[in-house]
Image 1 (cartoon, helix red, strand yellow):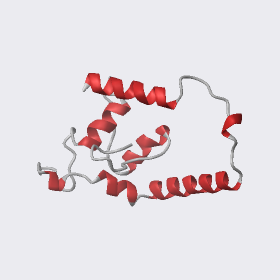
Image 2 (image 1 turned 90 degrees about the horizontal axis):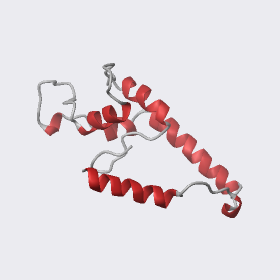
Image 3 (image 1 turned 90 degrees about the vertical axis):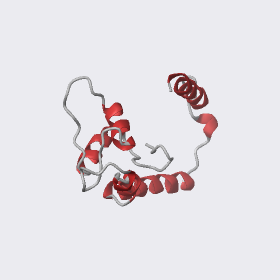
Image 4 (image 1 turned 45 degrees about the vertical axis):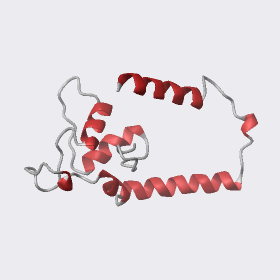
Length: 122
């Protein structure tokens, strides 16, 4: 997950996103109709008014630095370790991409669809 300026604020399994943000002190509202993706975007973009330490502060100098939170977290270290292990395993035993089954429209088609949606809706 990237911040609006492109810094990584979370990387990992979707199922672990909520526990990660809650471990950082950001409680997911239990009100009905509020989805996790909306909450993640609202929280990390500052739309929820989340600030560090001084809850009354409104300037961006007091905004939470989610990129630093992620970079300095145990979650990030564990993710990076697993990622690096996966890379080393692939280097040790390369996969012939011609033997990999391809299903669906492919990543480029999915990316083009996502960009088209984002351009139309924002």
